[in-house]
Length: 218
Ligand code: AMP
Image 1 (tube, rainbow, N blue to C red):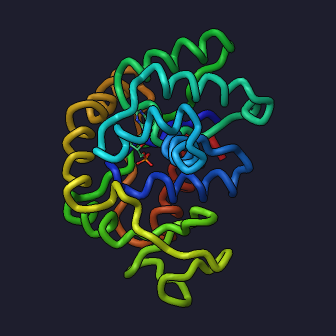
Image 2 (image 1 turned 90 degrees about the vertical axis):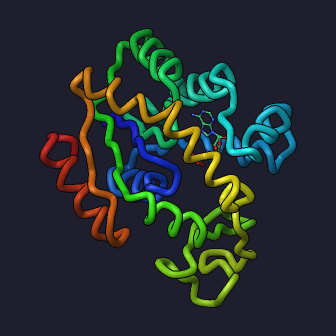
Image 3 (image 1 turned 30 degrees about the vertical axis):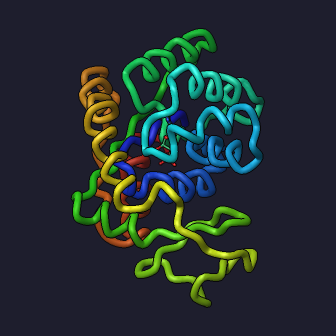
């Protein structure tokens, strides 16, 4: 199972990728999570990425391609993987194709999670994540048991700095220009499946499992 999850920021691809990863026991590779960890740890990578991320811009292709190349070489990825948030540009997609070719592997499917712009803004503005374990909640749709406190580890729930409204606008604009062309790119390769991302997390997950099963990927 080698999958790519595509979708606008806030489409829910991270949440869905995590559910698929745990159901099918495949690693989820989220370039956003890897970069945020590097920023928290103030590594050289983190220092380079922070300025771009704070403005809602993309980190340079060479940086993220290097991260993914390293990850895919790990033994845990041998039986498959789920890429969440990568590729985000056509050059990244081409680099991924080269990496997989050199490993004699290929992508099985690219799943484009579709949601309305209205839903995206609602989801992103209410999203909160744990400062300690990064678990994700939502002030309306996935409320923690105690306001502001992580159910999983008791850590403080905070808003991602790039989920602020003005940065969200930038991220959506960047998505339209740089990432949306990947939809056609993968459609032309016959790899694209569209998934309706509206409704509850569970409803979308059920649709996702149905789609993967229909593709013989379960
Ligand atoms: P995400 O958590 O996937 O929404 O990513 C958060 C931020 O990390 C993005 O707004 C970018 O600044 C950066 N980022 C994550 N993945 C990539 C990627 N594949 N290419 C470039 N920048 C990325």
